[in-house]
Length: 403
Image 1 (cartoon, rainbow, N blue to C red):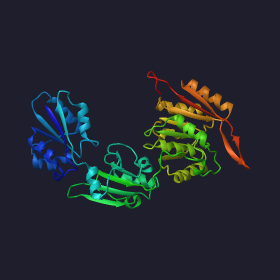
Image 2: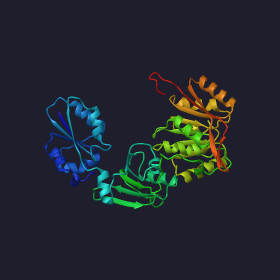
Image 3: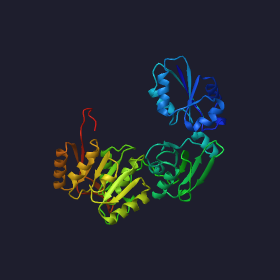
Image 4: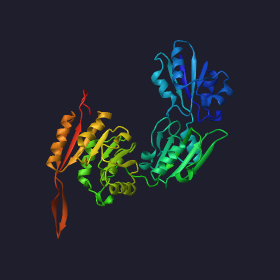
């Protein structure tokens, strides 16, 4: 069997490439999804309409036969396409070929008369995800929508994150007679109806450089305690946050660590709890000031409220109010691979943290940071020492040696 996956463009037969048309015409069998069926049946009345896994099952059940099967795939074969699933799952004896097509990305940007060399490309189709982290840290984001996250959800996410100055371009029913392209602000688009399958480009001229180091001067101080810059950088580095990690901040204070971690979790969210109402408002102010909007802040005394968050990958604990064991247990019950970093300034807190980590089977790394900063005195600069801070990292070790 020979299997040819041909990109069928946004939908209309007018966007098929010559190669795709030849494949559709000359193959023994043509398979496709429901949304492409109508234009394809005008070319091949015998086209079979199947879902993704049914397509794979059909190919595998006929893998030994001498035939050519064309799978007409929406868009292009290289961008969130059925082509990848077929390549991974079909019988190894089948000969596989891809024919590239016109994707919604190239079609939509051509309609907008814009290039796409600097776009961040993501798919929200079929995923329960937020566009907010991507918009915060990229000048332009292209997203496929549909399923769990539709255009209306994207618009609401931007409004709720107060990203109201961005420009949103929506394209629906691309290449069809019902094609519609609109460009506006999230607030102006809120409440409008859009097709379930649509594409979005969001432009953010005020995007944040996620690689920058946040200074103490970047934050509004208020009356909440703040983890100082040097310790903050060491603590965040110790967590080794990956872009897609779910991160908790327990005892957010001013939100300085919260915002610094949000920059690292640039494709995900940071979930913070803080017991004081004035501190919660301060975190929100610092989210606006730094542009780190991929944060959900809740007033609560942890572990209260954590159950409403998705399971954490990385957890910073700046203040536990005596609930350290309960907090760590609640996190580990949902993800035993979670990594913790606790900062401590008293010997009692260090001892308690070490005891709790030991009781929970966590291996620890303890660092004492003695920070001194230069202060000018006349013609000279003298080093002024701050109180030593202990940074305690705890995580379970598994058989492969990885956390």
